[in-house]
Length: 228
Image 1 (cartoon, rainbow, N blue to C red):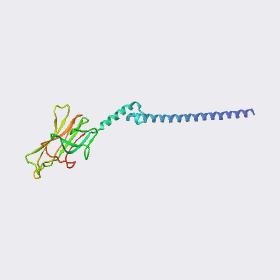
Image 2 (cartoon, rainbow, N blue to C red; image 1 turned 30 degrees about the vertical axis):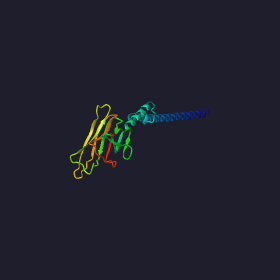
Image 3 (cartoon, rainbow, N blue to C red; image 1 turned 60 degrees about the vertical axis):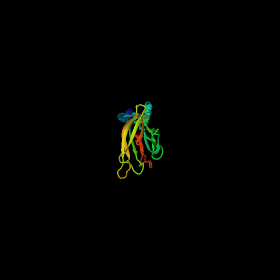
Image 4 (tube, one colour; image 1 turned 90 degrees about the vertical axis):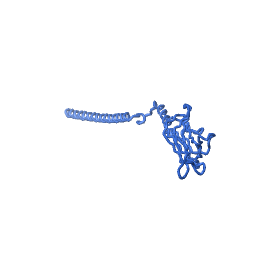
């Protein structure tokens, strides 16, 4: 009887030991799974971090605030806005003339005329607000003084630059017109060229000798400049 009890007790101990062993083994497997999952997450984060660094702008591309560079970004934005300004002026002919009759007056606000991004019209001049390379252009169309014009006479058109730094006015573009045979009227003069201009340069148009300018429509006589 005692032998049977001892055998039963031994069997119970073996079952209990086996149960503890299985439980410990299952716990080890779960721990291993969590460790593997953590390693995969860490590896993915490391790959993302590396990609962001290689592409540049980690803070912006990866969604992190970049407080240190905010001032620099604001300054850069201001510089970009300043760089984008492109002064432009397009003036149209008017019948007004000055006392000498040499330099022409222009319309700067109405019809096809405009001034953009700091360009100024003052004292019969386009005033350049910003140094750079400008395309400057002008066209003069003429009305005959009488019914015809003389074959041996010509008209000279000049675009002249004025600046306080220059000792005297400088002619930067010039053209000439002759009578058109048959119709006996002067041919229009178109001038255009790319020029380096400085802040404060003033551009004027003059004709010699003085002759009636056709200002009947805006597209016949005009004057302008724009930053390229």
